[in-house]
Length: 94
Image (cartoon, rainbow, N blue to C red; front, side, top):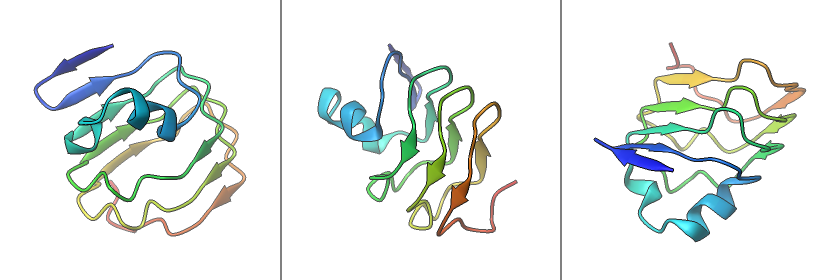
């Protein structure tokens, strides 16, 4: 795991809740790279108010909920997942 210039790279996590438990300041980041973990569902993101870039590629994600509260999010990478369900996704994404 590395934290550099507002960016967090996490390894071997299965959920956002697990990441928040391990790192209390993770919600202050502007970029969060979670490529290649074992995340299956995206929830519990409402307090990532500063997040601009979110990389969730190469996980096991099937369901994404609650990203609508991320008003600063402009880049979302979901490549190499099996997303079947999206709710509350904003249209500001690039």
